Length: 457
Image (cartoon, rainbow, N blue to C red; front, side, top):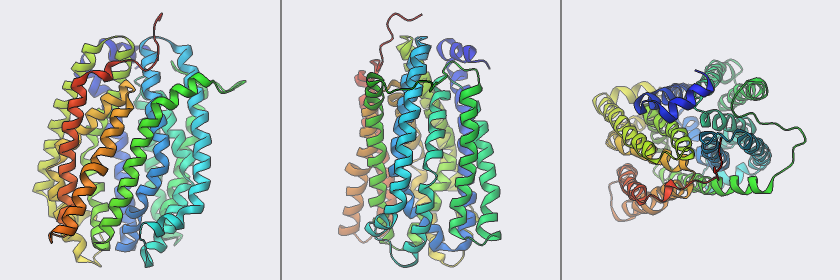
């Protein structure tokens, strides 16, 4: 489908067709990435429960740093889609160029900083013994992947803003498959252990980045960044920062919350930490349709707001909810039906049976929360696509800091129900934050444009 046809579909086509057309490639891409994470977890899990727990233990630290890249990507999609919807292509080109340069400068700085302060993070999180040893190895190497990851975020935002969700899917899929092939080679054949998993990821993402640069320079698209005689534009940078900052703060606040959450979970033992990491990978797999719809909604919302079609945005929101809740209920039923089989399949190491017991318990609790997680994704799509990222920030931070973590502390210190308090708190926090998000949606403040589109062609 050509770029002009995608734009016409987003602005004038059947809403269900638009949602499915845009979200299906994202679902496939996310599915490939999630399957890779599951395969990666299985390979690392064969090394032992401690190595597997280490990958989950350090994930929020890495996410804390890449949150800025995610924020910039959200800003790029929101701003570029509104400009495309208003047919302001030259302006969109300028924004895309500024976005990429800002993103690359930040990613290189974060990679260097993160590599050297990894031991401090692991220590502050309470990592000790073998958990600390493997966490340090894995986290240091994952920081080196940051520039390549940020480049993919930029590419995604530029493509998604145009409604082109197929190209990122193809490239991301190739990278994910390459990663899965390299994993066992570096982990076992080269006998590099947990470090091999991180190195395989770096190599596959690096190759992806080279292809992305080529596509941005050579491919004919509506938005074409240019760096000839580049210099920063204060107004454009200010607008990007204004939209990106709340999203980045929300993502980093969420990451900090997960760091604290992980320290709570680790206090219950390595088995609980390993179960938490594996079940999160499983739920990520089940949540792919909801996440794909939420991501597709950002470009639908942005272009239609740019074209002054608010009623169409509302229709897209309601129909996205219908699709998402339906998929989530099916996923919930599957997990409750085959809970033991699922856990036993994905946790290959048998050195700690408590991991299996904890995993099954967590899976049961989180299954009932699946429709709520789907609603959360759709609400995030609305607020991020409109560029009013302060609302998505409030949802990210509020869910963890104002609901989930206080509840976990209460259960931990005032009851004797053990790790079940963590699992219940995670599910209940999703309910509270979805109620909040829907109230914000009803206020209509998110309908205001974040860029000027008057006098459009």
